Length: 271
Length: 306
Image 1 (cartoon, rainbow over the protein chains, first blue to last red):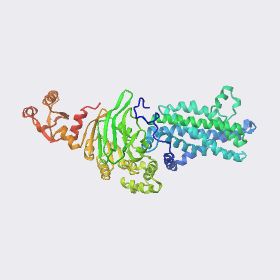
Image 2 (image 1 turned 45 degrees about the vertical axis):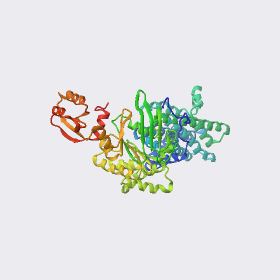
Image 3 (image 1 turned 120 degrees about the vertical axis):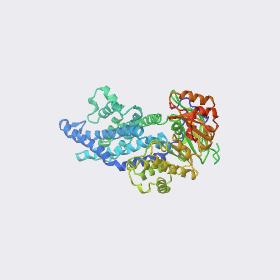
Image 4 (image 1 turned 60 degrees about the vertical axis):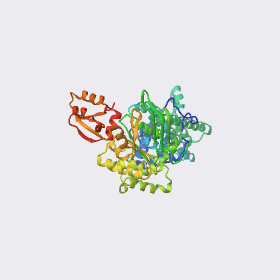
């Protein structure tokens, strides 16, 4: 960032050029839609088929050994857990990798920021687009689990809302980290060191009460844990007090990730 | 701040930009009146691209004042960006999108009203001579077509001011020629153009005025012909020199009060029309030619690029 900047009186210290507008967000979404129309096939295939393969492998493979967990059939337990996994993978990887490639190799963001688009509008639009895709894809495992006996309930209609909010937060986390890493190669630290534990220590494949207490405390700050809890509530019965807490945790996570992503992307894009 | 037609399209005053220990722009003063093509000429590293980035607030000045189309930068930069078009040095077209889609996306980003978007895209296609390539994917275009599309993308909203950062760098002469026509037509429409380039011929042909930048500031500015007359005189004479006696010859020319520059195996002496007979005898048989902007450029920015 600039240091010791000399400016006229009247300009704000943070130097925000104008207010947040939705027109630039819509403009960036138009671009995403045009790109999506070109390559929706492979994107959708990967995002839908991978969690279903997990669901079937674990549901049948492990399910035949485990039988039931916490009073649910294992395939029901894992079917709801994999919704969380799908949210994480299809939001954080695009946030991390696609954003990095577009910023560093394609210089596309430079072009957009020369138009009347500010960094926070750009970041909001990119995260919104990823969240719309990931939030939708993540519902697929739930539908497949219904084919294997998961009972449909009206509250399940809340699942897309949960996946959307969660995916928005994880997309922003990915965007933030894409602007933190110094190179493509160092993303391995994030993928193995952050995404893998986030994915496993969230009650996705096994309940957390089997873990040592320190790991349970860690899970409480894992946004994916809150996402999975909400999906299970929607699928197996709402618990209003606890669910509002989980929702608040997800919203706080998304808000914090938005601030970090905007701050770090601005540092990278505006010198 | 007045926003009348007489106010300059671009004004930079005392602008400084540092990157750590490096000062890229060092007290730059530059004013671009509305309606002209100003060529920003300078060697690599002179601060041209940094200056361009500061005008869109993608680079923030450490000191000084900048205004674009009457808007203060960076505070009001979004309004300024809406009214200007930017053609970047690096091609950042969306390769997977078609020609028409690339233009339509920027028509959105530049907030062309919905009803006018199809016409804006058609107009930009015409500017780029790509009307018959509307549905072609951008990665199937030739280098010249891509550059025309990149320029047209920056014009889709009929900007009053266009920034062109090295618009023809790395292109074949035929393609450069074609782009020059496009840039000239902008001036005819009253659009203000700030064009950075290190091709001297380009600056000379297209610009109403040229500002020569070196080491982060403007060292001189004026109409190309005036700069040539002021700094290089009416004619230049090239004298053959041998490597051995070169330093002594350069020194003799310098001490007689003449500027010179090495041009391969010859030494070009500026203002040769005033050369005294005594010096001419010493230099031998010269070849007279017209002074060019390149003579001015090298004389002002130095023979070596750091």
